[in-house]
Image 1 (cartoon, rainbow, N blue to C red):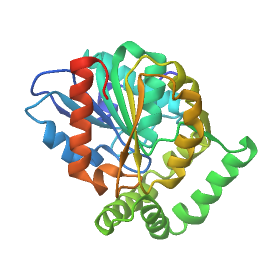
Image 2: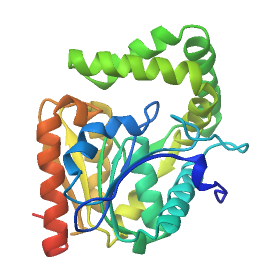
Image 3: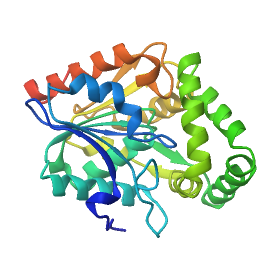
Image 4: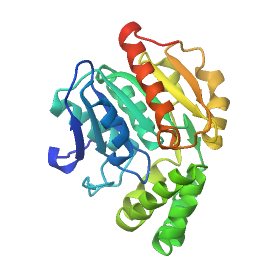
Amino acid sequence: MAANLQKEDLDVDVRPFGQGRPVLFLHGLGLDRRQWDEEMNFLEGKRPAAALSLPGQGNSKRPEEPLTITYLAASVRQWLVHKKWSSVHIVGCSLGGLVAWELAEQRPELVASILTFGSAPKLSYPSLLVQPAAWLMDWWLAGNNPEKYAAMGAKGASKDAETQERLQRAFGTAARQWRQSLYELRCAIGSYDYVPFLQTTNVPTLLVRAQHDSSVNKVIDRTRKRWGANQRVYVTKMDNAGHVANWDRPEAFLAAMSHWVNEVELHGETE
């Protein structure tokens, strides 16, 4: 399903400064463009950068039709075309990483490289269970006890007390203000498979394997034998980090991101 958004429908922070290819940041489920404030400040004056709130989250408009990964990718593609940005580096967390893979699958010429963390290459919950489970989560927690929902999500995403506090505030806002979007997106991400993309893509792609993100790491390890032969796809480890690695280890994350982008631009790949 194609997106039909106007440019004012997306909440975007753009820093068009510096030289080199732009970097585009895509946030995780229940977060918004503010997940990337540190990264945007770091890149200001160095290279063009943008962080956008995906449709239905943050201050971005939610469409009338249900949200899907395909729709989110189409909205990002539409924004890039409007900005006349091509060959961009995309950094995606969790849901944002799936959107990056989907966009690169649709329009690889728009994507110079991808860095993901918290993004599992494949999920395959039984289709008959996905919607009821998403509904139960929505009704039981997001609807009736958003603070408990936020606390559970924050605890599961990080072991760092400061990050948990930030996530609890963000998830609480999401449960109160973007509840329908969260439900639709939980349905959308219950079953997908980007392993074929990782097997065949020519877009340099780096998966960050954060130490404490055990559920995602299990999927990376289980599927890696299928896509690990693709020499354009890499995995790197980040110690003492969880699902939202850029908040758990901000300095380490900035260093890893900078190294990745610079290596791709210098050599078209990294070591």
